[in-house]
Every structure is written in structure tokens, then in C-alpha cells.
Length: 262
Image (cartoon, rainbow, N blue to C red):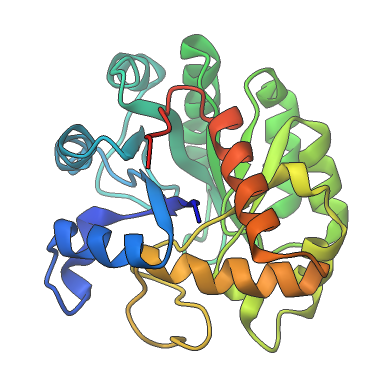
């Protein structure tokens, strides 16, 4: 079994019982068949630590980006391009728009999102996109900036089929987190049934959004298997088929990631 956690935050593992012991978390994940991890950056202050983890483990890659809700830092297209040159950086993000946690005049969020898309196009690496309460503006801005030129992933997807179809049309993959296993996630579950299997990814968003049966507890990459099992049942296919296809999808999208021999 080879599963990929396409979106986790190892730098936030102090919330887990191990207090941030990445090695223990990775070893536990392997017992569940999770063999590869994308360590996603949400602020540039912690980017050196994110990158250090990726350099320490051959089965971990990194991204570079500044989360849309982060108001303590700022970045630029040029700065992102420089940091994204590293061979272990396989994506630009987490970026996007979030109107749930940020309010008021959010032009700064739009400008930051545009900078990330332009940087991704400059380095020819895919985007990791976060959107919350901002689906229409997110899609519009992606279209305006030509995000389809590099594609990417709609991380922790929580929208409807209409948004999924628009993202798919722009060369984006749809990634499902533990949210899809929740009882109140009927809309997301329907998207998971309908989208092409060759455009699906799975993730944990560790240490957040643990799937059932661990809902409400700190999440960790090994739990992506629960999400995979749920999705396989939802689509009436085997876990092996879902694991094989989502793994293939991951390495097709994130071309800088090197699949290890296991």
C-alpha cells in the first residue's frame, strides 16, 4: 500500500502527543501505508524549518507560500520566486482567499494571491490554493491571472460541484481532507463521487481536521488512510485502486517530488 498525504504541516506538530517528533509521526504513518508527504508552508518565518524537514527526509517535499490570513508578514513575487528555486520545493502556496477569518478591505489578500500565481508561473510549479467563503472571487482571480498555465490543487475542498468543475477546467486537482468523512458533508461527498478519479488527491491538513473516527483530536498524516478508505467506499472501488490512482495523481502534478522505492 502506497498512500500520499498531499498536504500536512509538520512544523505545527507540537499539537500532537509527540510534541513535534516528526520521525515518530512518519514511522506511525508508514504502518498505515502512508509513504510520502508534502509539508506545506503557511508563513515565511517558518519556511527554513519547513525546508529543513524536507531536506532531512527523502519522502518529504515542501512548498513555499504565505497563508491568506497571515497579517504578520508580507511577501512579493520576487521573494517567492527566489525561495521556490530549491529542488525540494515542489509547489507555491498555501495561497488563496479567505473571507471567513479576514474582513474589511481585502485588496491586500487579492494582491498577495496574484503574486503567488505569478511566481508559480515564473518557476513553473503548481499552486496550492486555499479558499473559504470566497469561492467566486478565488475562481475569478485564478482565471484572470492564468493559473491554468501551471495548475495545482484546490486544497481541503469544501465547495460544490460547480466550483470543482471550474477548477478542473483550469488544470487543477481536487483534494479531500477528513471533512469528507463528516456526517454533515453531503455536498462534498457528492463532489467526491463525481469528479474524475485521475484528478483526485487526499490529504490530512495535519494537525487539523482529523477524519472520523479521530474527529476532534489532533490530526496526523497516518490518518489519511481513513479518508482514503471512506472515499473508496463512496466510489465503490477498492482501497488499493484509490491509493494507486491518488498516488499517481500526486506525482503527476508535483513533478519535482521523487517517489521512493518502498
